[in-house]
Amino acid sequence: MRPQKGGGRSGGIDTVGRSRSRRRALQAVYAMQLSGVDARNAIAQFAHEQAHEVADLEYFEDLVRGVETHRRDLDAALQPFLDRPIAEVDPIERAMLRIAAYELRHRIDVPYRVVIDEALKTVKRFGSEHGHTYVNGVLDHAAVEWRAAEVQSARG
Image (cartoon, rainbow, N blue to C red; front, side):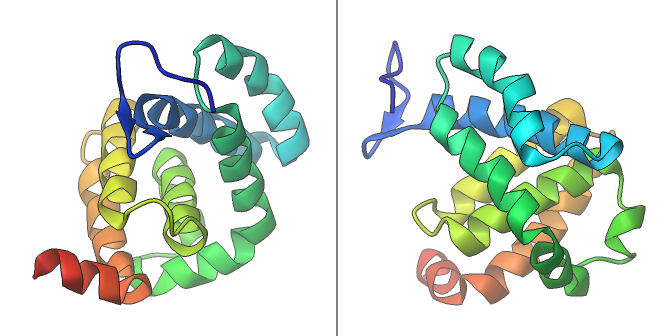
């Protein structure tokens, strides 16, 4: 992991770099959804730009590969929290839901609040006008089920 200039570290994690990695991962997963390109090619397409942003390249690659590897399981796990089939969710919101679901289910090192907060920031920037509201509702419900002990502890 590369040090981040000017801070941005929390508990040894480069939070600024991870935020950038999530944005790039969103772009890569979005491209995978639209073009059908696999993770290896999507990573190659975005990795060069990713490296120049002093982001966490390893984290970016893990997110993109994780979504590709676990897509069917992630979609099935998300479905109970959706009001429509996942294929009908806006492509940006769908990509972000998949990334956040991967983090919630497979990256326990990332607190659920960070996953949700980062997903919302990213969707606000790239998604539809109210897409963040939808994503927030889905991820809040998913976190309660998938990370029950952590959520309960945080809510005191």
